[in-house]
Image (cartoon, rainbow, N blue to C red; front, side, top):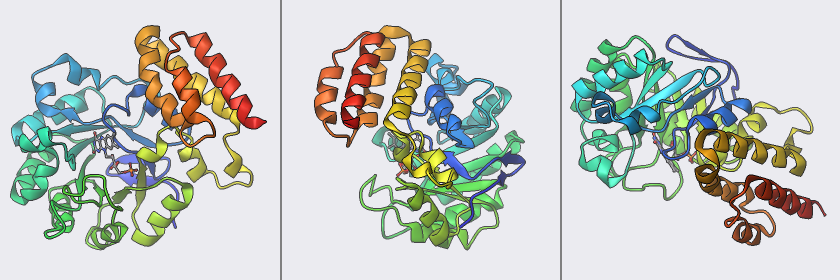
Length: 325
Ligand SMILES: Cc1cc2nc3c(=O)[nH]c(=O)nc-3n(C[C@H](O)[C@H](O)[C@H](O)COP(=O)(O)O)c2cc1C
């Protein structure tokens, strides 16, 4: 098992534990929190290359970042080599440290447009895209792929090798087929098989919920780094728990520490979105923070109607205190 520094192309990373791109979740606030707990590289959610080239406000909004939000991976999706390379150039010019191309999104609308995981079906097109994008930017370039379209026809190895041949600096693999969506288990054995075919770094993604999972993925697959997605929802401290194996770290966070983290998260949300929208947007995080805790359902039922920050913090305080008893 290897936890430690890592390089992706020219990018030097403090460790090999990353925050996965998640649409609707990995905005500046969530990335900031993940970084505070040690994630060394965080990704934006997937951003439409078309939207960036056409300069739509929404797409640019996803690029919102800060000096502390570094190094930043910006993920783009699209199907046209020219548009993708133009979008990559825009993103690099705006300060991204790494560009990732999404080749794993299984959402129908994205597939219909010939982008996301649809590209797994089009190896030749993948090479065309990557050659073009590679020549457009000098910062590190990665791709995030799935196993393949369906069980018969797994082609992650082929796509990963093509990427390497086109000068891509690392491959990120979420080893489920498009057909699988998010069901079943991620096939960590495939990470091992792809690892064996590559010289460039391979990052594994899928089903890391605990530090032990992270260690096991690295051990079993030999991957160079791991990404945590859903395992960080309501538990942004998972990065610290993976990185910090000192005695006593398994008790982190205590209920009091959890309260501080929730308060900080809420503060950041209100700072960016204002109280009305911020409180609304915070609800899904509150759900994740309290998922699986005793009396969580009841607490959430009463907390959803709270629209005032002070009242929310008081409710969280009272609830978490009740757990301590
Ligand atoms: C709500 C949600 C949104 C996601 N959005 C993206 C995305 O924008 N780009 C991407 O490459 N993967 C996306 N993913 C996939 C994750 O990055 C990750 O590969 C997958 O969830 C498996 O890892 P996990 O088990 O750690 O969540 C998303 C996953 C979820 C659950």
